[in-house]
Length: 299
Ligand code: FDA
Image (cartoon, rainbow, N blue to C red; front, side, top):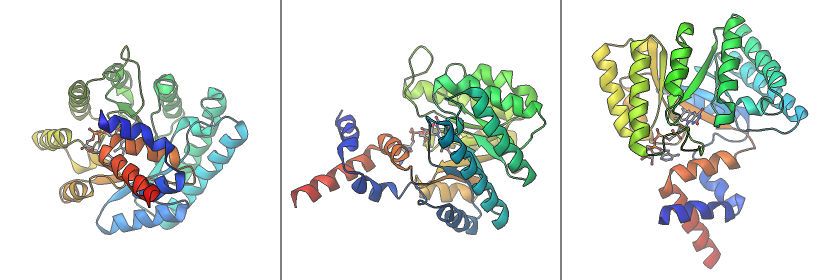
């Protein structure tokens, strides 16, 4: 209850204060910041995926700017030969304005990336975009692109059907719990129900030849995944763990000793929405931000 009150108070805290704490979760405002984080993590054998911060855009002009930005990231990845790839939110390049227009932009990004041997992950947004995103994936694969993957959210009741439906593609899938607020008719709401579904989906992926990116910081799921991989003697080339920049770094570094690990590295000026979501997931951090502000205010 107290945690919820604290989380709800965050939007009332001035942005510069939030920014100080957000810096833990974002590389910085420039592509060079994301490149530097990648190089640092590469030194300890880690990999990253770079995300240009930004979500739903409301004009075609913004979507085209975002598309150009994604191509700049691809250039940076290629020119520095970095162990990284691109994660893209389809609404940031216009899916929500007009799905055909959004697809044209995604196609441009994926074909540009393909020329430069860069992989592109379609992040999964809220449920109005689930089918559209998976359709984009199918269309891209049908056009012959292999450098593409998508995300499955364990909180969605439809997820197993989606995985089964896409099995023929032997896809590269990131499995996460899901971060948006969804209706109980379509989504599991209980913590353990989501964990149970995560486990079901994970087992299915490992048993059916999907490249499996295990994206979670949840200790129960990490331990389960480690056991499941061991049991199946899954080859290192067929899976990886994924975490967000700045989250559970000790655990992440421990995982790195035994498994491939990739971190999600967001950068850009549009850092506010992303940071608020991170604070909502981490009540301790949200409390620290709120209390620092109260102390500052009372000085
Ligand atoms: P959970 O939320 O239970 O966290 C487990 C533990 O980690 C808790 O102790 C918690 O405190 C700690 N923790 C979690 N987040 C933290 C934070 N920000 N700071 C500090 N501690 C934290 N979602 C989505 O809908 N679409 C997507 O495309 C993606 N993509 C994605 C990529 C990657 C690489 C990751 C790791 C996650 C995503 N997500 C996502 C987000 C995901 O759906 C989910 O919201 C978060 O990963 C939190 O869920 P956990 O499985 O980590 O469990």
